[in-house]
Image (cartoon, rainbow, N blue to C red; front, side, top):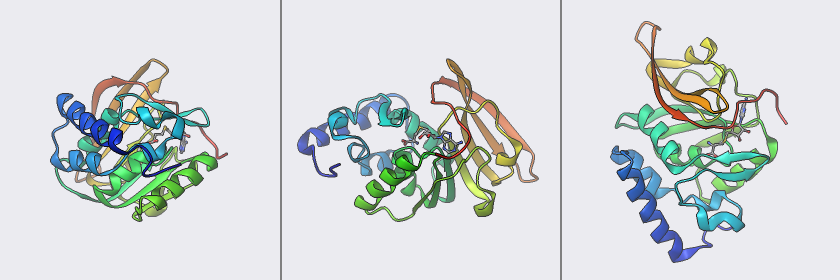
Length: 218
Ligand code: SAH
């Protein structure tokens, strides 16, 4: 895997990606700056690096996919609201790309990934990019990671049948969780915001398509 590999093609493709994000409504300057700062191609196999900046999910091995640039930016924008965060939890770390973007938006990122092979690759890519405020754990993240809670934000990158209460309890007051909820072709992005007294508000957003959340560690 190469961090530098695709040269000028990548510069132009990255500028185009940023334009696409803006055209699709991403407006938070912090999120746009993070998307600009983090290269996407080092997270992919060399054979598909040419497509790294296209607006599409791509395979990352083990039957999993990296989410499209828009969905990564959208989740970040929903949780950040224009300011940097203290601690963020990601469930479904995959290749580590979303965690890398989050590393620019939060002081600490904890990312949970159930597939050990993906964890190994993600850690290596983050090391090559000298990103050192992301910790990836090879655990089943279905119910979050209470030991490091509370979080300013929780981003779930795999479709859940429902959002368990154990998870929303790990949010700080005012903190936000964004997760795809549903199965197969009927998933929606759901956002939960924790109120000051622990009560939560819930908003159903656009239809989305994510790989399913699975249990166990491999
Ligand atoms: N944010 C990722 C997207 C990865 S796709 C990226 O930027 O690449 C979703 C990931 O969720 C897959 O890698 C899958 O293995 C992982 N996953 C599914 N169920 C999980 C669970 N219960 N705990 C942790 N990770 C899980």
